[in-house]
Structures are given as structure tokens and as C-alpha cells.
Image (tube, rainbow, N blue to C red; front, side, top):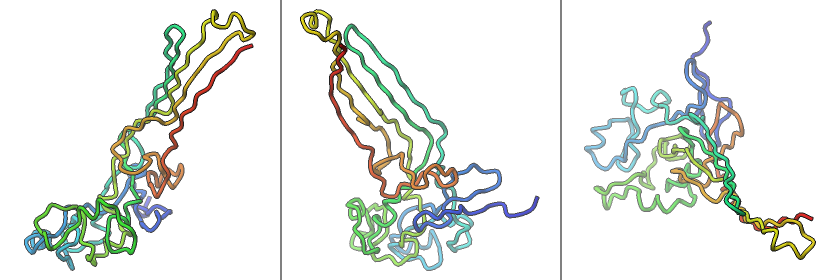
Length: 252
């Protein structure tokens, strides 16, 4: 048929360009970026991972095609924003006068871009950085320490926050308990002397439990809405509210 074999996603993700691409024979929602192998700590690292203009304190990015240069051709698939499957469970359990209703829902096999880390895990963007950065960045005073992040004085273009790396792609699988309601129906003997025919006391918890490895606030975040081409981007999304209520139902 002719034509290109890949197209960048129409939508740029808040400064990240061409993170998503539509490629022939590949699923939608693939995230493309640079794989971080570590941090250049010394001359030996520079020799082991030779890339033009690299310096001690920079992130070591995988030179996928081995040409000694870093460009768009070196990007690889870092994750997939559409889940392998979704699942849920809902049931009501009853015992004597008690009833318990539970609703759970989750997704498995999905990646999420933690956009909150884009400029909070570097020290050169004139913005606040997360505490984890200050505990794990390269410091020439302690060059042998195991670290994850580049030096705050690194001038590498990758540190401007505009290129997606594997440091910002996380496991977005989760299981969320969306609702738990526990109720108790008063016996007819307790109501025999009043005009109320039935009464049920209950307590409800909304979003009480979330099980996930994602370090952001909400693994369900997606600034692109339901767009299947650019799914799974968290850019400052609020966490799901956790609420607790109690009440009583009367029947007359």
C-alpha cells in the first residue's frame, strides 16, 4: 500500500514529543523513550558506554543502535498504556441480620507514565524536587555510591524533562476496593412497640483500599481521557477520594 510504517501520536504529552507512535503491526498505546542504564560515575563508565558529549554525572542512556550517538532512533518501547485485562468482583454476603456488600475492580499488565516526575527528579529545572531525588543523585564527593538520578549540574539535554525515560514509566496495575457496605437489620421484636416496620443501620466506605506498585497518587489517571492512542499518563491527577458514611433506613 505504501506510506510510512509509523506515525507519531497527534497529541504531544505536556512537553514530551512523540512518546506514542502508531506503528504497523504493533498495538496502540506503546510508550517510546530512552532506557536508563545508570549514571556515569567515572572515566571507566564513559569508556564502557561511549556516547557523544556524555559527561560524568549524566544519565547513561542505552545506545540502542550502537552508533555512538543518542537520537530518536535509540528510543525503545518502555511500556504499554492499555491493560492486558480488566477484572472485577461484586457480591453481597448475608448472615442472620447482617449483610456485607463488596465491590472491587482492577487492571493488570499496564504501564503508566508518572508525569509528576518529569521535572521533580532533576535538580536543574528551577523547580522543587522530590526528597527521593536528593537522596539518590550523583555527587562527585561520593562517586562510588549507588545512585539513580543525574547530578543537578548535569547539562545533558535529557535532563530538561522533555524526553521520556524509563525512570518515569511505572507498573500501573492495581486492585481497588471501590465500596464496602456493612448493614444490620433490627429484629421485629425491637420494633414491635413503635410504628416503624423495619430499620437497617449501615456504614459505607468508598475507595478504602488500593493495592498497587505505582508511586503516584492515582494509577487510574489519564490526561488523554479515553483516547486509545495516548493512554496512561498521570500529570498531577488528584487521588480518588476516600469517604466514609453511616446511616439508617426506616420502613413505615
